Length: 350
Ligand SMILES: *Cc1c(COP(=O)(O)O)cnc(C)c1O
Image 1 (cartoon, rainbow, N blue to C red):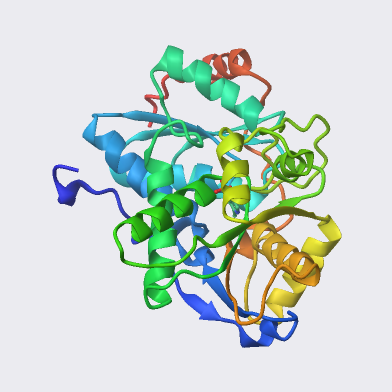
Image 2 (cartoon, protein in one colour):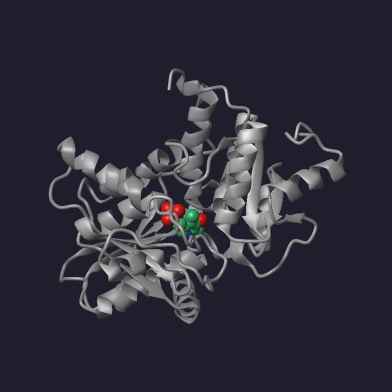
């Protein structure tokens, strides 16, 4: 970046890393920390990526941005675009939790629900990028978001006294968090700031959409593309991770694993984290449920350090719907909607 004063920021990052002794009693062995990513601006770690992505975009003179998202990437784009003075178009699956939909609109983004899954929303963004000139900030469509997520890896090392944990438990959807932290750890080792092995990454998914678990089980290059998606509307519901090959390779190379937990296990895990003072989103709760599972299978060795990610807040997932946001199925319907609203397609109404 040429001019640090032009960084697009809302104070993201440097979230607490809290030792959870009470929860450690539930594990056969190991020391547990929770990285409290729900304390970021916009209530999720997505803020880190969008700070960098929009700072970079600003350097290139970008004015119009768009993203497909299960929710938190949408609200992070909305907030950071508001700071940067850019236009934001956010496309979310129609069953996205109401508070998050409301949040996107509240930051002034053009917010539209899509009758489909995150990749259906992605098709709309792709067409709009071609026709409207939007800058596509979808997962791994530009370099900034993964770079921003590297800061999670750098912080953990610093917060643990320049030492890497043995295990990272991360609720995984598109996977840019895993990719970002893996890069950060390799760079820290390369620079000699930390030594030892890379942490073993445990990717936790939900049953009904677990392409990484399937890829590892099938023991070949990334299989992915789960046909019948039945999991709940969270950041984990990504049937086609854009770089599933790399994700699967990271899990294998670090000696990690992937595990899919049930909706019931997630609910129970959220309850348990709540009783230890942590407001966990379903994704953060899934991570705890996943850790209990793999610990049960002997994955955690004596004296090991575990960092578990609570990626968002329970409050963002309150079960109510927001009804005055339009729903479309594809780009053509989006254009019709704009015509009906008498709004310029490019959304100059803002
Ligand atoms: C996006 C998201 C995830 C998944 O993160 P990836 O790095 O995209 O795999 C997990 N939890 C929450 C709350 C999210 O918003």
